[in-house]
Image (cartoon, rainbow, N blue to C red; front, side, top):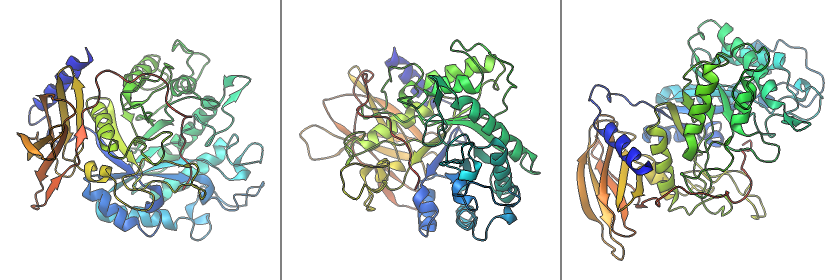
Length: 479
């Protein structure tokens, strides 16, 4: 059944009327936190723009902007007034937004914890029950300073895991959803209250993909935020939430993009319909808007040298392309993304990797095969005796001639398999007979005459990967 449905979806996309396909349905976003806030931002933005990406996401950590963040007593200042913050507070974010505008790149902001100690309930640490009132004041300052340049906001990064919000549970019952709900409402009101921001899009969620240990499973978290029980029935007298979308981090495991986590409240890219169904059920109760779009604001494929969570670097482009295809054919997905230009730095002793290795470059800056593939992702999946191929030309997004090349097993030579013309949005696809473990790649010529050739990819195996992912769920660490 999956084979026929995917093929039908692919053929439907290719057969869409020219007018309907005149502009891409999904926005592509990019997140490069280390580079975009330092002296390499201009170069990094040029790279991102050359990929055909016109939006970046920037997480803004409240603690990094607050005066005297380690004190237990709040300093005496007007937290809603951006001019009341210490000199230099906004410099790096100012420079990023200005540089992005020069490159024609929009910036999405995600205000989040960790928070100043004086904003916590316990006056200890930096994530314990942040004050919703003070958070709203800080978001108001952000909206006043950047509202004219920013029109997309998401609130709080991964609020269902303890690195960003505590406590997650109390006496075995999730308590982070209700606290996040209050934080979100405070931020929503603050943004909407600023003149000129009333048409900005504000999305809730930003949930991590899987629950484990003290991390709340994302769909259980969603139900808690919407004040619903396990059967999606309303509980309590919660005021309906207003939102323009739901953000989620649909990371998969090393088992591949079609991996199905066994817990029904987890959502990786391979089981994205779970989130669609959950939002629809929640929407029918009136506790959240109906038909919320999904924003996959953080995604990437982990690669070696992290063998715990990653795949070989040669496989990274193929897995990413399959994941992007999954997102592309899901009409509820409004945004897809790539997390990291460059892998996080390993620990000094080299024994474990502390962050993510989902970058297009290694931690020392060398380009991976994923770097060459990102502008022209090519997904190949096995269905019976056939391989179904899907791809897009990200920088072109216009009707373009492409060549699909193939290399047979045991051969060192690439040969032409098929010539195709893409749709007006740069999308193409075909179904071919599979002959062993053959490799595919795409070759095309840009409008400026530069010829581009993607790396070779093998078709993704038949069936859906099952089983448990190796190792614990990964979390995003601060840069």
